[in-house]
Length: 190
Image 1 (cartoon, rainbow, N blue to C red):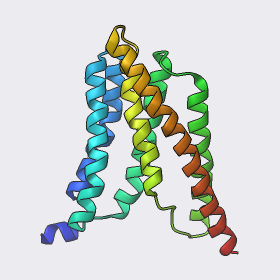
Image 2 (image 1 turned 90 degrees about the vertical axis):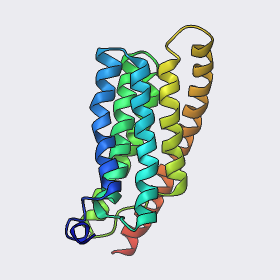
Image 3 (image 1 turned 120 degrees about the vertical axis):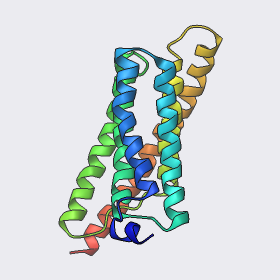
């Protein structure tokens, strides 16, 4: 236990976060180079599971860290961007989906930079924000599976777009909520 206090980054939650980050290039390789959709979907599922468990374990074991607080949402964003690019390259989603999600993230990135410049704390991820991300992360494997013919492709298309539309709506709603909080904090800091 003494070494864990000296090396606060060496925790189980941070190891899960790092493992999840390694899944991003693996997912891209499997989905684009090999078109091994089953393995690509499994990689996304493992990424989603580690996203859930890293936070749960960090809170339960008292191993929350600044690294985890910053890395977790950053890796979520990287997963989303990588998956959007893969889905677009595979003709599974239209360009407008990518633009909506990226514009939201770009605006929040600028807000975060403004908060940092004023030495204000970063925005806290809300439960609704996590729900938006989870909806998108649930949608993506279904949208990839929807590229296949047959009844399971049709079912995946319906489920994928159901999760995607809810996820996009929540993602934009929470983005507006986060932006309101950031603007409020910036105004108070004057």
